[in-house]
Image (cartoon, rainbow, N blue to C red; front, side, top):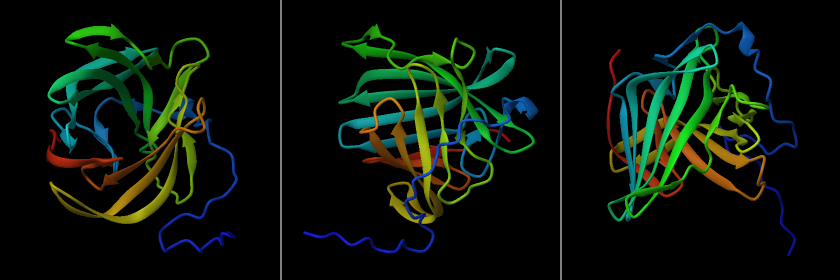
Length: 220
């Protein structure tokens, strides 16, 4: 059966065969470990809870900071549960460029659990390690159709494409408008794909089947 390509809806980027941005002029940045852009918040105490069936993810901006190379980064903890059992804890390291508002991703420490015990550290990486550098987790200026790397490391090469800038999504925590819709893929595994939605002033409200159920804002 022949499939005809439909024109993209308003506010949705058409698919294009173009390169992924991986050079971000990071040397021009004056970084801060606290702050926010429209869709990503780095204020201690900011907390998001997303759930779907037996799955639950709790994301918290901690008071902790970690030096990655010469950059002070904010620690954002992500705790994943299944049937009430802790499955994974990741401590992600972010900093915001004061000049551009870009939030850079400097790596993560990962603890994977089985029956209450840490069994491995899959996906851990640091931007100051060999052949690694920071990517952008959330641009300060959103460009429809833009593609960029979020992670740049031998073991981590997640990347994102901006699909929509005016999405509306209903979640248990409320209905959010003017949301950012993102498609994430992996440079290591092209078949790996997931979709996420971010709400202005809140951050992540949808990660595949997981939807925001509660949130609290951090300190200004």
